[in-house]
Length: 393
Image (tube, rainbow, N blue to C red; front, side, top):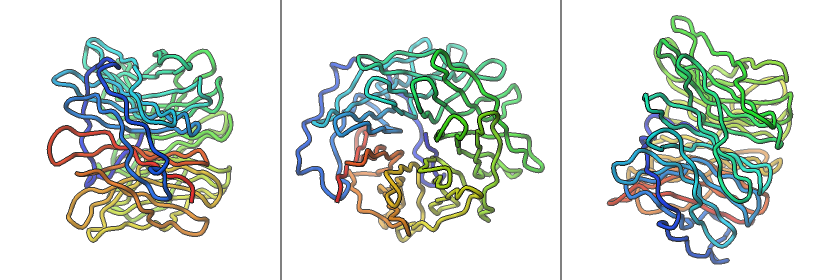
């Protein structure tokens, strides 16, 4: 669901379908593993070549989902869904699209244990990306038909937010006949997904363009989405859009004076406390909507190289927000980055790492514990899924 700074991006890869029985269950998590700092928790790695987790939703301490995709051999990408029941993570069979079957999941959200949504994309037989949405009913994942846009119809979804069983949003992008990427928003009304028109910035000297990577709905008349667009120099710039119950509109954000910047995730506590994270050049970026305007909130960029990005944010309560991403460590190498808002400032929080280049894509909490997920490139062998866990304290 989230993007990353160019200096920190790890290339997307695909994965192949694998039967659930082929992936061993993760060992039970001991009570000692859940402390007041983030520690690494074992997650299944079904792909023999590559594994990535891109989003996580914590419904309860015994009900957590993470989604992504994997590579197995020379097969195309395959969706990955893993579940933690409080004792450890296990692989759960998910569905793909296309022929041959393939898919990637970038976002997950839930209204309850029996109503979980995941969104991403797959590639059809003619090579065009198609939107992919899946739903968990408490027993199995099933694909739910979702539209694209453009001619031919196409699209990819980077964010999903389920407010109720009859009101959900998914956002992403599609490519028009001229090869230009444009914003895409889909809405679920309890029966079907449909395209809702979204605007695109028109920077001077460049065509209209844009893409959305995350969405958060406060109500049916108050929805926020964030992403980026390309300016006249083909450099990424932040994009914020708002739904007022009737139409989407572009909302002005601060001039960062940055060569390149983007917003990758959004969350909210209220209509006057909306938060978004991302990057500006090589620095972390946090912005807040106070009910009238967006403004930059200072956030640290650790490491001697001062090169970091934030990919995910979650709001537990006022004065308790978490953000996650990656930074270039002093070695240099990639390391996990977790930051915390205590009501007055953002600070770096201690976070665990596996052996290799570690990066976090998303973070979520349920008031009792916080989860962050991503991936790690070990010194040898396949890219692996990464999950970090923290309890109160």
